Length: 319
Length: 183
Image 1: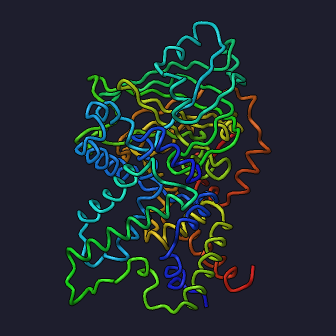
Image 2: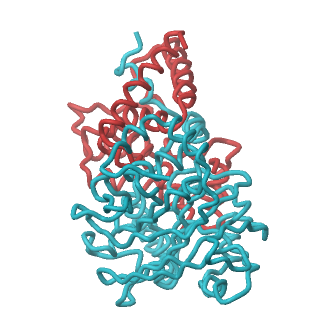
Image 3: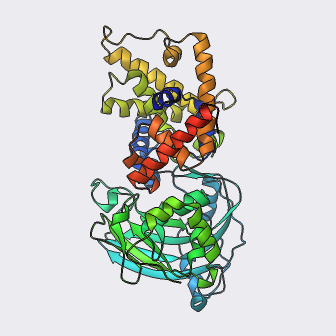
């Protein structure tokens, strides 16, 4: 009889090969961000004490070491006022490409809202919210191709994958560091995260229910530079819900619970009073013609647990 | 990212690379140390020991040879050594006899035949878990290897505790079928 005890006993002696098998199969074996951050700091301090890493370098690198961070290379061929906004992002693209083994083509697909159409491959949203001492900006939406071989938050991305991303920046109004802080109860000590939401549905339908199951790439990539946090949020699999309206929640936690986000009378996601660290919820300017009702039905049918967790709710989504 | 790629990343960019390695293997290291020396290490000790393991990985990054063994195996080996060190330093020899060879720790008390059978079963089990696919494979790994609660797992995966629990129970049933010869 194969019992739970037997299972546990067999797993006790996992070796490197087993782990490779499991990670290759998409098993999330990663440690939580706080543990990773704490241990990384400890190792780098130890290395510094032994003279293996210059202290200055540690200081400069500190903001990068919270979790495995990554960023994508943006190749913008767009022209016009809108495009300039993303051009100003102070990313060192070549450096990023080299550091994270990223390779992006210049082949960008346009994902634009009809009334905000620009020549190029981005939508510039430029929506800014000031909240709790933070400035949160939805910079826009981009399409990127051909990134590969990156592990982020334990998820392995490999192969040529195209994705559509909402790009968000977050800064502290006092100009302080965005990534680290001593007070873990404050935003500075927490990871700032983001998740796309389909309007009218409970938040369970977001990141895990849809993205990780479908693409295994649907994750938020973080990148911090010069006290600016950049979040690249994969919204690819949400585009088929464009007719429902898409929102993007930005919050000061790694993950929120379903109770922290509710819906207003129009079915638009809002933070509830249970939200521990709400920052902003943006409406995403996506073209409704990207909606694919058949795909919506397919996604939900494939995930009965998502359906169970997501519906019914006080608001019934309408087409 | 494969373990070889992870090692390459560590060499190319040690500061970011070690963070990636820690993210991938610190749970494995903790578990290995706890299994061997859980009786004598405190939470603070554990963090120190795991830190030592990854400092060693950081230091040895340029001399590690993926042809000779995976990064995870190296982490396990280092973790076992740290566990034995902890037993030597902190253990009460009357209550926690020291193993003669840390390499035998995981198989203590087993005959060679049992060891081979156990290893074969473990490989089958790992393949079976992998075949469940995410998120069920992750739920099983985190529940039965890392010992996390369903609430913790649910939080990580964006599921409610009940949903994680239900999926875990179903996954276990499926595993049982596979391991007992059914489908």
